[in-house]
Length: 408
Image (cartoon, rainbow, N blue to C red; front, side, top):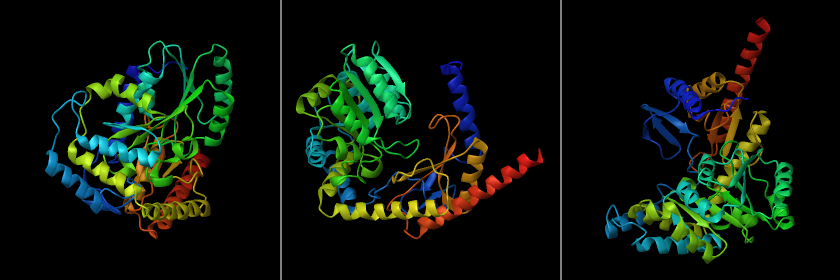
């Protein structure tokens, strides 16, 4: 297969996203996006497209935290963080350490955390193995590792990963496996049981996991799935998102010990050169962290878990063809053509439901998908109704396609 050059990739992305924009499926402006409903183009939709899994963005505690920080520090803290940082950073990192059980380092975003951490953690003679469906920001970060061997691994194929570990361990190199905790491409989990076994068998192996889509809704105090399964390992670094379900701003790194934190803080490029998080959003993140530490937070997680359970039961009942049966807030329905995926999303919007069209480069070019997400915003009764409507649309389009093929 011919290599996809940067020019060809850009041409493909421009064409695919241009078609999606012409159909009104992307690059829209929202009149309102919070809550069980969203307003787009003046029309109200039931909201099945948000990454606010825990529905905290309008929580009174977060609003108060942002307001208090705005009053104390204004809209911006006008120092490079390399010289002077807002005291809110220390408070936030202390709270995150209580959540994760590890030293943490806050970054301006999860992507910028990757861009700081990986070039510091990975040495020139190390080997990096990265899951093919790891978040694009992780692939972007590996491009900074000039001179380091970087190889892609088929998605969640632990047998292939082990073969590569065996091949490279003979050289005595440190081997890094880079992956997601919950994959936004498919909505599935990393194979944590297998990863734990590999860590035990191969002392050369280290893991770097982006757990952005599991933070807040999963794990004790919302620490996510990676730290829940692998948090006791000294050879695991986990990146978190303070956006998405956390409803604050920025990202964070949960590292094995303070020495790793200090190295990244001093040497990480984006830790030195990127701008600070604005004080109101630091205040919101701090308030969110305190909310996560409250004993009552588990009840909020249980509310989302109930919606995930109801959704999965409806998906099984209606035989909806989804990418994975893993119970996460991300559900992907894959299609054999972009046109079929687009038309399904459009019909769901006509029925009053907002969900997302996913195409290249967000997903592989041969896996155009309808993506829907679940959150505490969703009324419990709306969840099975949405799945029923979607299953009906998908089934009818399959029938129409079969008739068209038979007529040829």
